[in-house]
Image 1 (cartoon, rainbow, N blue to C red):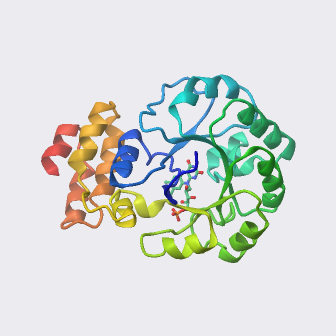
Image 2: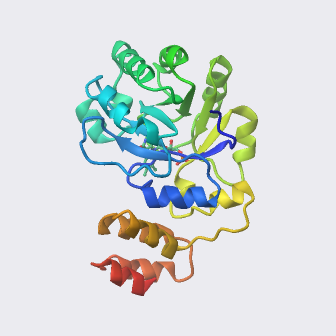
Length: 271
Ligand SMILES: Cc1cc2nc3c(=O)[nH]c(=O)nc-3n(C[C@H](O)[C@H](O)[C@H](O)COP(=O)(O)O)c2cc1C
């Protein structure tokens, strides 16, 4: 069950829709994470790409049934303990879930609900080593984003902390934080796996560069085809159109126009 590649698409809420994940796969990314899913949310999930399905929770409620429902469709499961968002603060999940007993209960029930690989993703925090000890009992790997909750997504990731963490870990470590097509090899000298996050937004071709595949080019048309197939909402398609045009010729002008579009047809004629 070990992945054969070492560079993954990091979990990104609002970014990693099914169409985007499928494009990253086409570009050569073997494993793509979903964004956050709540076991209590009844909305149906499209998981045809066999992603790593990441959940957030602050109790064990609903986890067993949720995992039973989707277990056949996923490559692996991941538990989010890193989210710094306001909503996470309000409800006490992600990086705001700091009760080690609850964390252990959740990972235990997740372990009991699947034979698939199980991961947990954390940030740099004072609880990180205690979570590691729990993860070593239940999980196959641990993902680390070595920025603190207060840092959010800015400031430098603490590489020194991350390397020390890796030294102590008895399970493989997935590193996340400023990974791109130029530096991923140097991270792989220190860590077992790496994840690409923001560098992949609107740029699925980054995985073609990394995997050496020459048969992939960024194409919003390809995204759109998939987005239609999976009935993605207009808002999501517009969001991705904005991302996909970044760095292209005339992109500023295009994006200024994109702001005002109201239908998929308008996007199509613009792009
Ligand atoms: C828009 C966005 C959404 C994210 N959503 C999630 C998420 O749902 N779950 C998670 O574990 N991390 C999430 N992250 C964090 C990324 O997975 C990653 O750890 C972080 O962005 C650092 O990597 P990067 O520097 O390559 O972007 C998100 C990051 C961004 C920018």
